[in-house]
Length: 63
Image (cartoon, rainbow, N blue to C red):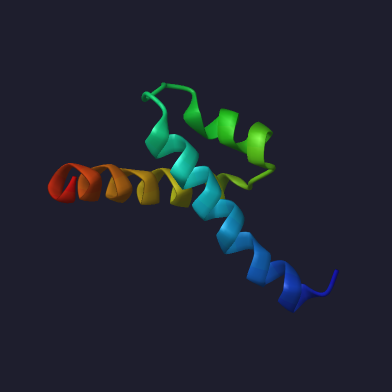
């Protein structure tokens, strides 16, 4: 896989992880769980958590 193609796929993996986090109840061990479930790095897992929080907020605001 080329580096450019890998970079193009990474955001979609992070977004998928964020959607999964937003759709499930909060849990204290989310970073290790995301790393294992989605094969993310620690940074990607943290970004997914931040994105999930925004998704939750927008869902509450706009239904």
